[in-house]
Length: 458
Image 1: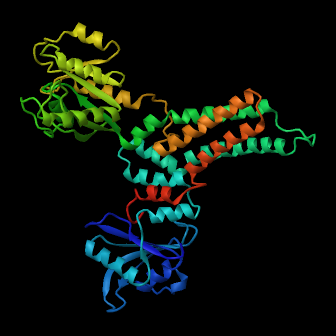
Image 2: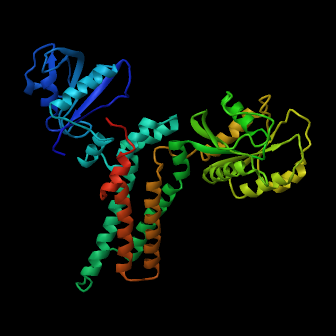
């Protein structure tokens, strides 16, 4: 990381301001070489964390490119823990790219996506879980998502994982000492004490794993699929929830032949509504792919809204629908409740003995408020969940699952009075998985994957 990088840190396009960021050993010399301050400042005497007003000059023509503000952050007190200069210019696309090109001409390299945050991680200013939280803050689409991401950025997850790591290290040290010095007559931590400590950590990890479903929803929003046979009003219901005509609605069965996904906000949670093709037996060939995609949407959904036409009796296509949603979290919607009811409610309740039934009308809007409240309650679940300590990423869940399994095995080894070597191996596995989350150990491919999610300039 001996080179100096630069990039536009704000979204491309026209706006009030644009920020161009420079980071590296030569950041100040490169940026100050283009900068003419309104008041004379010796190049080597820029005061860190102070904002300077002046002009960017083209060094070849000595013409003014823009009036700017220049801020200097001296290592290690900067975002990357390197020398950083941020130039705040007017937000025109041409002027911003012009300044960027001048910085490159003076020796700075265009940064890769996420490279500033990657340097912050590699320089030890943040750990890997905090680096991931940077992009989560940027993309937060709700208050809960923002609170969760900010807490992780501030180190809530890191603090807990580091605590478990250090406690496991202490147990491991005692176990390995008892192995290495077993014939020295020394006293070491009792196996019962080690067992209690490992069990306490394992229970904590297990509890953190349980936060993943809601943590993932905080970060990505909940996926709610609308399912039903053709012409029960799925697309009309989607339009009603969105309060706009987004899906095509016709009386012809099979109009929806692909999944249509739209986002709606219910209170402080984003919901990804998926309008799927109608499920029916013996579909036309062109409908088969749509039905296949509908089933795939059901597989990845957090909740299924199972829609029936209350104005018509059940038929064999409804039976097909019931088979598909078995075992999946769902709500049963009785649509077209503004019409005379011909549905056999007793038969339907027998097929869904534990389901919540909601009467709705996409046409009149009846029941939509109750439906939204039901969706929200399902998504939020346990209102006592501590949003400051949740996991939101599949990578974290997989590592914690592996650590949890290893600690369960280590406890079993202690309880069965097996050798300390067996216990130590599993404790080391658990520690390795915690270290991967934190970035204590990593591979370049993992970093490429994580920081590849970032935009250039972050």
